Structure formats: C-alpha cells, structure tokens
Amino acid sequence: MKRLFLVSAWLLAAILLPGMVAAQDVKGYTEKGIASCETGNFDQAMKEFNDGLKLKPNDPALLSYRGTVYRCKGQNDKALQDFNKAIAVDPKFAKAYRDRGMVYFDLADFAKSLEDFKKAQSLGYKVDEDFLKMVARKAAEKK
Image (cartoon, rainbow, N blue to C red):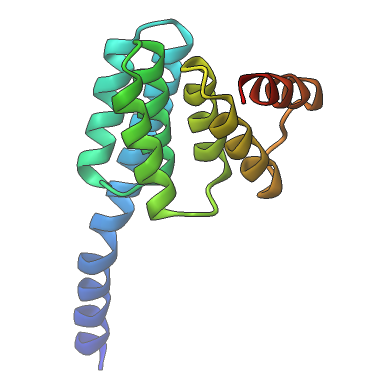
C-alpha cells in the first residue's frame, strides 16, 4: 500500500511539476519584460516576452505585452497581429482590445479605435471618458 502511494505521488509530481515550473518561468519572463519596457529597453523586453511565448505560445497577456513592444518600436503591423491573436485566443481579454485601439489611434483609424475602446470598456477595462469622447469626435470628423 505504501509503495502504491509513493508511485502515485511520483507520477502526480511528474505530471504536474513541469507545468508548475513552466508557469513560474512564464511569470518570470513576463515580469522581466514589463520591467524592461518600463526602462525603455524594448529589445530586452521583446526577448523576455518571446521566451515566455516559447513556453506558452497562446498566452493572451504575453501576446498583448509583445504587441505593445512592437507598437513602441513603430512596428504597428506586427503589433496588430499580436493583439488580433490575443483576442482570437481570448475574446474577453479587454486589455488586447484597448491596446489594439491604441494602434488604430496611432494609425488615425479612429472608427476602429473607438470600437476597440468601447469593447474594452464593456469588458471592464477602465477607459478615460474624456479620451473616449475625443476619439469619438475624431471618428465623426473623419467620416
């Protein structure tokens, strides 16, 4: 009986431990990437987020963070790809809508920007009301 317990415990650890280690690694890459972004070291941030995505390729938060780095580097097409993938993975991930809205704002596509900000807001993301009104004005002016 004791032997069966030990074998079961070992099997359970063998199954769960790699996932727990990967989750810790992903968290570490995420934290390091955010810290690198905050200091303006976008190349290092990109490396951290890419390393995290190797372990968890469909993590909407990592995709959104990497998309933000692409946006900061002026690579809006790649940023949109990451935000679109994050939304495809998790259609209720409000931050990805907000971040994609920022890229559309940068591209002066105010109608799409407004749509994404409203979607983010409907999912619980705090969007500044004055900013939202300004985007709505710009979208109306561009029609």
